[in-house]
Amino acid sequence: MSVVRKMLQYAEVKPGEVVYDLGCGDGRIVITAAQEFKAIGVGVELNPKLVREARAKVEALGLGDRVQIILGDLMEVDLSRADVVTMYLTTGANERVRPKLERELRPGARVVTHDFSIPGWDAEKNMRFKEGYRTHTIYLYRR
Ligand SMILES: C[S@@+](CC[C@H](N)C(=O)[O-])C[C@H]1O[C@@H](n2cnc3c(N)ncnc32)[C@H](O)[C@@H]1O
Image 1 (cartoon, helix red, strand yellow):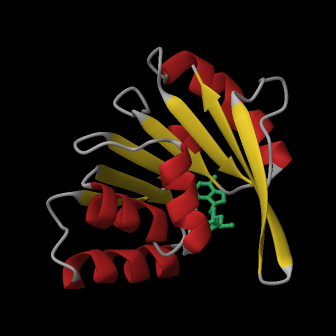
Image 2 (cartoon, protein in one colour; image 1 turned 90 degrees about the vertical axis):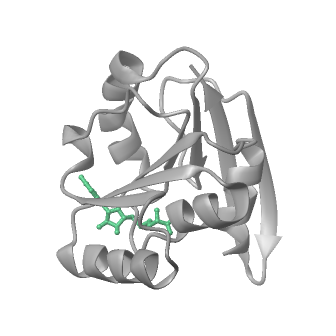
């Protein structure tokens, strides 16, 4: 969770901004974006079990009007509304998503990735930090 907060802080998420998490897992990034940063969250996840878990958390926290969890392939979701996109995928997946980000993101939109960079893009900045025994890297890109 501390990495999640760092990613959102690194992107300087502001109230009312729209945050997409591509491959949202249990929804923790979009839920934190809504709860702590007053953003609108959209999570996309392929795994139905994780989608059920994420939706149940959204419901339990009363965030249904601010967080949407989409069951589906992140490659199929329109990103033109996004102010910020977060990803914790792999370098290969980031490479596959890159042309989609280039086509759909509006100028100025930010992309934050965890541990894996986006091949072919120059990060505006990155930071490495230790959390327990693990070292994490966060990359920030701007369209
Ligand atoms: C490492 S987890 C990250 C979860 C969450 N973003 C986080 O940081 O806590 C990656 C997630 O991406 C999902 N995923 C992988 N490929 C996907 C695709 N093409 N469309 C949607 N979700 C995908 C996986 O099912 C997995 O839940």
